[in-house]
Length: 517
Image (tube, rainbow, N blue to C red):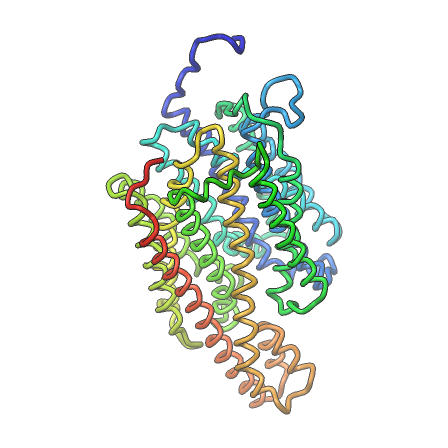
């Protein structure tokens, strides 16, 4: 059929509409899983690859850094014709999902890396693939589903990406107990290959044939600014906030992002249409999504340490104990579709953030001796609230976007969420470091300096140092470490509760009950 053929493209059947996204859901699970899967594998990598502490940090962070930095331009590619306005068909969202191929190939590379530097490089390429997959898989949904089915599809999308985060420690722990460390990456290969084939066969093409050229100044400043900011935030969470390199990265990132905003306001064809933020139906659901991501990532930052080090669970047992959070997110995302259809997105978002705040506030009463049932109940409440807030928020944002800009707008939303996750680790990591050190320092006087330094560094180091001391000195240190960490954990959880309350209050006041899209 020629491009001028007036015959309309036939509407895909319901079965075909769901078949492609169902395969992409599996790919999204692997993308989310890879954000957290290595947290339980680092000790093994340190031994098998003889990786230094700095190398271990970058094995984890290379993926996050590239993922966050490339999200905006990757989303925009799906809405544009050929990047250089060459002749031919548009790139389109389905074809750019060939980013799956990069993700699959890099996963195989990572699994068989013979060195820490090789693994860092492979993780970087995985971040590129993930940055392409995520916004384009969301951006294609409005073109694929009518409005009455779109909420359900987006709820599935949110559940797939969100559940991948807490699933990371579970899957990683199980694989490490049964196979070698490369299995945590190798599992992506068959899953990603299946999704790639399904996308090529089942997903229809979708793009804007009249879109303008790529906004290269906007891409350059957004990528470099986001990369510099996240690069500075990551070590900031480890207490290196006064390091000149860290400060230079943060200041440089802020200046570059300011230049990005300045350019976007004046560009005739901006990468991001800043007028979107004048629409409360876009702005406040974006705030809800960012707040939900911030708080869930914060919980996953401290709770696994508590369950593993203080409660004495192994890596797989710790992952299993996060199942209530996973299950609650899934249940809420599945149930919220009918609720939003009846009453709109505002009430579920506000209620979800409020429910999450209650879960965080109650969990702040945790002690070293709290039964697991207490943790399970609080995690379930937090997951329920997060699921109730996130699915309607993503749906509300997507509903404000015209179909031909769905991928770019989705990329903006996910980039904001990803940067919120990085800020979560930095801000809540700062709370963790300051409170933990403050509470523990009075009990370190008189101990050997190496023991005191190890205790200050982190809770795992403190417990290891306590085991090396003679009794009852070691038992006494372990008792104080447990008390200091749970006190710190309470502060982190209360900070998360406060953020949820603030976001819920702002959305309740500023977002109209039902906005025209």
